[in-house]
Image (tube, rainbow, N blue to C red; front, side):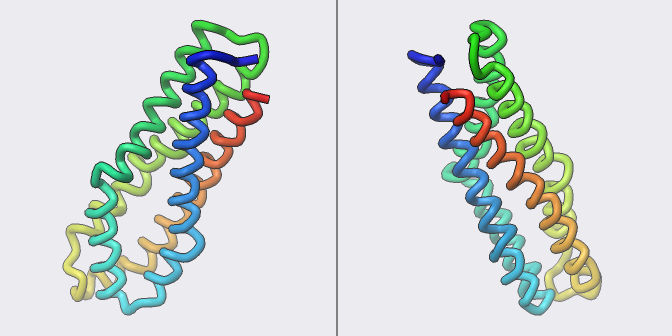
Length: 159
């Protein structure tokens, strides 16, 4: 059984990855649908505003902090090598680091940056908007599942 400071570390990992999964789930299930229902100029403007607001300390502390916790959990797991839960801890860490944090960097952020370069009312923005919504949401679904699975694996490691 995992105990002491390592237990606290894993509980914090559960909390962080679970919170991130919830944010991503909200975007996948209703935020993006709501934005997609707007005229392209309004949807682009709203998403650009959301993307600016997202990189503030409140969300970034949870998002990047969960990546740091996941990396730390993986390192501590390798050092301590607990009798139980090691596979779940390593898989959970990998899922969050690759499937949530890493995927954000390689899939969602580049789309956000491209969208930010477009003028909301411009014809290019109207053309790009449906593809953006479809592609961004697909990768967000993957991030949601990866974050939730990481939290679940951390929970299983503690049981």
